[in-house]
Length: 307
Figure 1: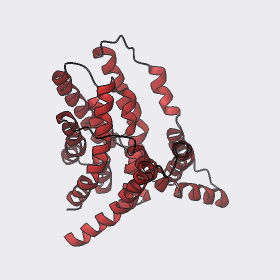
Figure 2 (figure 1 turned 90 degrees about the vertical axis):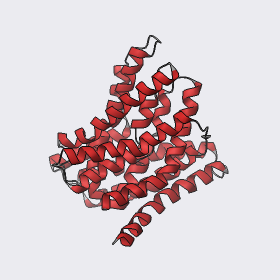
Figure 3 (figure 1 turned 180 degrees about the vertical axis):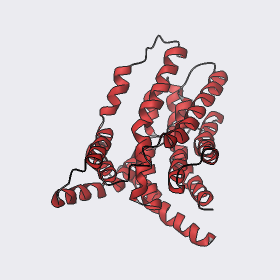
Figure 4 (figure 1 turned 135 degrees about the vertical axis):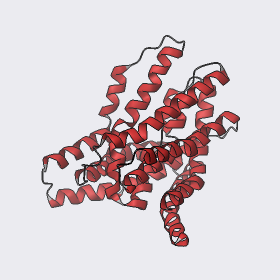
């Protein structure tokens, strides 16, 4: 039984991290020029990924995904990690930072979607989509409030910019998919076939883009970076797993999706909140290291969840 589970885990993760490595190789060797990276990124995140999210949500069972319990099981641990890490780093460095965001903000699009699709099937993506709607808005708002009160830079919370994050193509894809799902609007067969063809291109291109982006980062080892990586890949998913035990009510698949989302590496978007060159260097290292180490920790989490 253990051997069969191990093979399922390997079969799920090898394609994901294999494409990430291929993207890194293409970027590191400059086989694809920088202009090509940008063009591929625009097509991926403004067309392929929104269409994938639309197709997944348009035909998903939304009943359990709309449960407040689902959001509680993910965001209560996320907020706890964010606050604890920011307090610890603030005391250690004597200044505010965005380290709490690095420990609580997961790369749920580039890594989470492919991983859950391969491991649990497209139907399980509905749980990820429910969290994804609020993911950036809530955590980025929390970071902005922290900056405003403890940043000592006279910053104000830019509510307009935060709300505008809901207008990005990924959220629009989710919204349109939910609209089609809840309204029961029929999608003509030929049109849906186009949707499926575009959606099929999303996962490989997204993983290649992640690998290419990692090629531009450099690893600077430090105690802070190691602590952040551990918090992201071990402590955060452990808290989500514990919350699932304390607050039963979701299906096993839903709990598995939430733990895997928490166990995903740090998302690239946290770099937008870096406070100075030192933060940029640490955050870049955490993004790089957590993505590499996730190739080891994610199989462990999958085996734990399958036990």
